[in-house]
Length: 138
Image 1: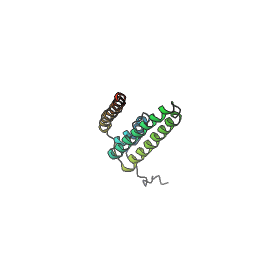
Image 2 (image 1 turned 180 degrees about the vertical axis):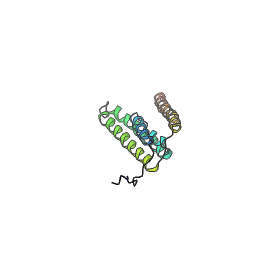
Image 3 (image 1 turned 180 degrees about the horizontal axis):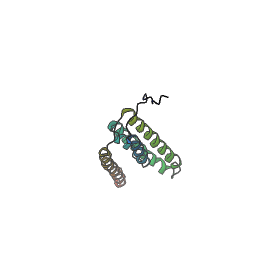
Image 4 (image 1 turned 90 degrees about the horizontal axis):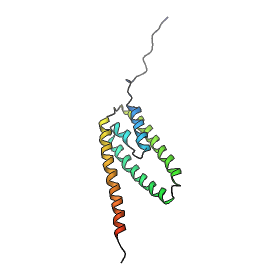
């Protein structure tokens, strides 16, 4: 009896970078910060595009939710969750297909830059509103 095992299957060393990228993307995406999983995977251009694009979408959604007295939130929340999950699955596939390894340093830098951008945007937004409130008609 021949007990030889065929080794035609190419095995990849055990690495959890793909799962971590997916979970980071879904977790941060749920809170409105998309792109962290891609940043972890080292795809900085895609992370920047997703971060800025989704941030714009979230601000538009906030305006719509405010205008509809929160009724639109019934659609906005599931939409944002679906977008985060789809982006997370795509980040996982990117890591699997390219063999990229994650870097926590990129994520930490991304969080710092993200906080600065979000706070700066909010300051500009509310500063603009305050300036509009101080203009008196003649």
